[in-house]
Amino acid sequence: MDTETEIPDVCNSPEPSSCEVDVPNLMREEITDISLSSSGPSSSETVDVPNLLSRLKCPASSDLSRKRKLKSNPPKGLRSGKGSVAVEPSIPPSTRVKEFPNEHLSVVSRKLFCQACREPVSVKKSVLQQHIRSAKHGSSKKLLVSRKAQDKTIADMLRKYDKNKHPIGEGLSDEVRVFRIKVVKSFLKAGVPLAKVDCFREVFEESAFRLSHSSNLSQLIPFIREQEFASITEDIKGNNIGVIFDGTTHVCEAMVIVLRFIDADWQIQQRVVRLMLLAKSLTGEEVARQLIMCLSNELSVSSNQLVAAMRDRASVNNVAIQTLKIVYPCLLDVGCFSHTLDHVGEKINANVLDEFIKVLVGLFTPSP
Image (cartoon, rainbow, N blue to C red; front, side, top):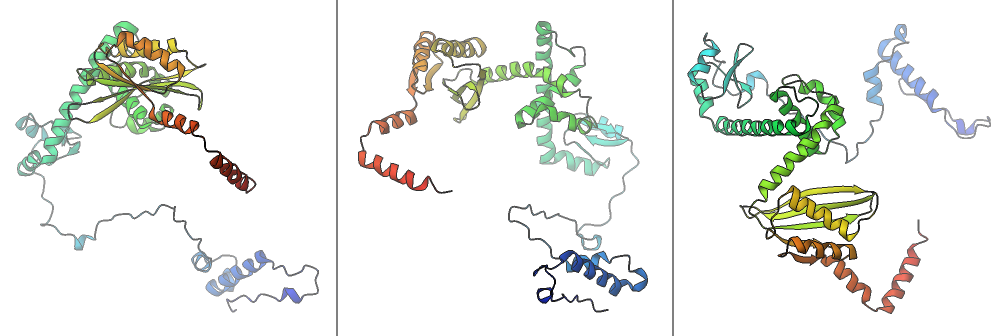
């Protein structure tokens, strides 16, 4: 049977179905023709799927679709190398750990493992020495020492926090609690909802400590907040700073306080130190109270350390600035230039321009 399907002349048919083609029936006939031509009459109930797919039209991909190009190694016969892989000598890994005591080596699953580089290494002395002399190992050692110092700092802060708050889980080991805090901080820093940690829990616990449910991990956020404030206090210590504050009603009534300063490398740094969601708009006294509490009580900003305040010229902010200058007399009040220019434009008398804008808006308003 010929594989080409002949479409009947349905337009000249006396039937009252007009010029409509029964596409499903034609497709079914073509599938049957492909099956009979490829498999024979005895296997007409099965369809040659590859042959059918080659006849069906493939949809065109959008320019927005992601194009993936997987990298692969060349065949073994084409690889460039110095020869066969060296055979590992029959030396216990613990021997190399004792021989190189300051290189952060350990034995994991009866193999020599580099804790700094987080990878297994050879027990062959020449290969191991080459690894130790590499720049990668040197930078990894410095990073590991820094991480251990940070873990110790977190553990010390946890002990002080336990004396005042006595949070749930204070009886756990320092290693477990530090690990959980680092996980929560990573999720908060990446902007990932903390509830998603339950989806990654199995992966995190494979080679590390046990986690807890996201509802329990959220109890660590107040401690992380105190830790962040301690870090910000250390960053701004000895530097002149400026404060930026403003409110918005975009989602709800909210207020934000931002600090700006220049670090030792003459780089401009910014830190968000307060984000409040409020039930109603604040008065000038309430704004001043939040500023003084945040700057003086929580961040220990001295009276001559705050040199500038940037805000819009709303009346409540004028009252807040006057109150803030009592505590910080060196403060330079900087109004928002964008709002100033906007108000200047409002005072310009341009009747012809106003009429033109009205006609222009009316021209395009009815358009879809």
